Length: 496
Image (cartoon, rainbow, N blue to C red; front, side, top):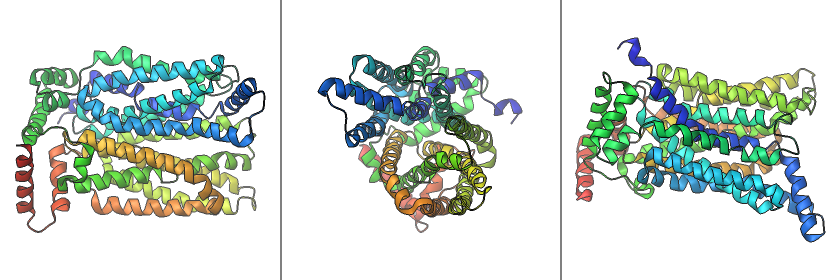
């Protein structure tokens, strides 16, 4: 293979950017920007309550309303994950992403007018809708990227989802600075600024083709598939990708897209599904949320003034973005297994260091700097493995008919885990204090062991080759061929 084959065309690269700006970028951006105007929103809630009821808002009710505003984003994300796969099947990957921007623009308008109208209820509805937008984006964007990428570049291109997510977090941290839109007068503009990525995707994405795999396998449109592949890979090199898609189409033999509940009863994808659930829960419960919780406290202990902490926090966002880029460059050379296992092992190491440094935080003046270094190292380790490769593997472990349903299941697990850790985490920290990292250490150890024992390397393999790798696990070592043949006959029988 010549060097020319190893890099995507500009069309392919720009298509990834077009789907990313309105996809996972929105998730990262909207997770990030809600932190900056916290005090301003508290004041807005109190003033609105006084103007309505001629009495101040009680501290407990204020906390409750703020919790609703912050956490309803997760509920919206869960709803988005539940409908994202169905949208991708009915409207196409590209069509679902374009329609999703309507939700983002409506959410931005509602959040923007909540302050001038004095209706904090609009802020709650807007956060719910932008959560739906994020849930759909996280589900559909990796589908599109995973299906348009050539197999020797699939890992690096799939990391585009993580790169745009971390880029969204960093952008939100920057825009949320008080010198920009984080001031008291501008917070409604800050929350409504999520409309700009939506408009950008509506402007640029229509210029790029639909997923070729979707066009041929789901729609049976071979001509449009060939045209799309020629635009993505060039008229001289598209044939190899076309053959790969045709082989998968032939193997599916007209099988329709699966429903999520059908995957739970299908022995042929049992271990792929277990893998997605374990990895998704492992990513959310790995301790990354604890790191961000402790960040402000550790920065204060290191002698950084409260006014400067938001600027130091930018470093955490920059770390995540840097490691996502690094992982994208390494994933197709090093492989998925080495990176994700290595990431978890490094997180275990830094959990141990951080537990000790937090325990002896006040004994020596230099210990807070060890804690600060551990925070950045933990974030780097997370971004190098679990942060990005989890979504990549979800795309690779399933063939076309099962992939949207797998993303719906993975997205649902992710949002439930995200909500659960948000609810339980304060109690875990309050009860265990710095020793909470020992819980996350155990969780990282178990997930790393599972990946080592179960997941094969998927680098440079087609979706059908990866499916065959799991046949031994799904059907057992004994009578493997006979079990597989019976399973495939049963599948054909069910179709007829």
